[in-house]
Amino acid sequence: MAHITLTGTTSIRSWFTGRILSVFAAGLFAGWLADQIFLGLFIATLIYLIWSHRQLHRLIGWLDEASRKELDPPESSGIWGEVFDGIYRIQRRHNRSKQRLANVIERIQESTAALNDGIIMADQNGCLEWWNRAAGELLGLQMPDDQGQPLTNLVRNPKLASYMEHSPDKDPIKIESPAHDNRQLQIAITVYGQGNRLLLVRDVSRLHQLETMRTDFVANVSHELRTPLTVISGYLETLIDGAEHNPDIPPAFNRALNQMQEQASRMQRLIEDLLLLSRLEATEPERKSQSVALKPLLKGIMDDAKALSGENQHQLQLECGDDISLTGDAMELRSAFSNLTYNAIRYTPAGGKVLLKWWQDQEGGHLMIQDNGVGIDPVHIPRLTERFYRVDKSRSNATGGTGLGLAIVKHVLLRHEGRISISSHPGKGSRFICHFPSSRVIIKNLSHNH
Ligand code: ADP
Image 1 (tube, helix red, strand yellow):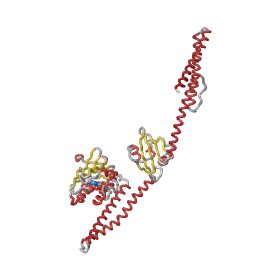
Image 2: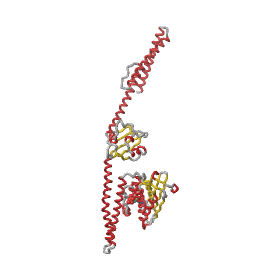
Image 3: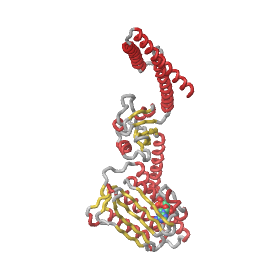
Image 4: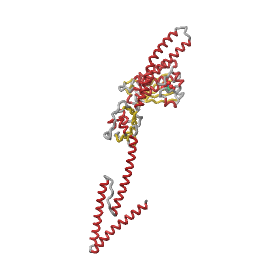
């Protein structure tokens, strides 16, 4: 290849020098004949210049037309012919690679168009660049009218707007389809290149429906079981009362009645927890939240915890400023904090210490519930907030837990934009910390801060 190019260039160069030389030789000769050598040379240069200028014009004309359609180069001889052919070859090569690229893009577009999941490409400002058929159908986007428009202008949803703006790397969100009633969409954003966004849109209506059916079913069953259980416990109580005052009743019968009542009240607690959990899952958090004074709430929980501890005489300690309030739902917060405190009592041997401590820093407010009880093996910690997850089934049955306590805590915190962190050492004790964002912490009097 290098050889060919070399020969080609050499021959062009020699041809070029040959032609110029012959023009000048002819000019020189004619000038010599007329005894006007300089005039002859001047005329020869002029002829050559005019010829070159004409070729240049043809080149410009051709380039101009060739930019619109593929066109054979004009016929020319000599150096100009080589220039035309060279440009034509480059142009053909360029066109071929353009065609190849266009084919690849077409194939990608065809395959993504056939997908059932929606794909949207948006620039760093969230303006639409391209989307496939499914995305257009699921979100009601019109090609080409909506191209270049910000997605959040076309799909008006606060959840999507905040997802696009603040947290594109977080977990996918679920929104209702703006184009179809009762259709739930899951949207996941991936950032690529220089802040460009790739959105994956999936129709999760069926999954959502199944999820709703599941929570509805659990809520309905729990609700239906509530009344018969209340009746059973009522009668059991009456029977136990009667049996206590009747010496003819054998002690085994009494024991059986007591056990029945114990199990019935365990079932009642389970049902209450299930109902609370399905309510937490099924409903959106209350928009107009109350301001909940923290100290009285924790004091109330401590009193109940003392009663639960009873003869076990746990040492309870509360550290919390007087003027701190949390924005949220009092009932839900009470339920979360009491679950953690009762767990601390239940999983701490008699005489153990339980500390409830509140503090706030630039990251927000934190409530720690710490005990020096049995502790938890770290392998269990990641799964602890799952429903019915128990470290040790026998231990939990003995403590009367429902296995739903920490799942409730997690849900309540999520509804308050908070989270839980757990650390524990088996045999040494556990520490559960509820973290709340600063926006939810209200401090009335700064001098009381801890
Ligand atoms: P349960 O009703 O069984 O207590 P939870 O969801 O409240 O259910 O807790 C899940 C499991 O976490 C419990 O079974 C227990 O093993 C463990 N656990 C929770 N709190 C503590 C604690 N303070 N100390 C030790 N283990 C704990």
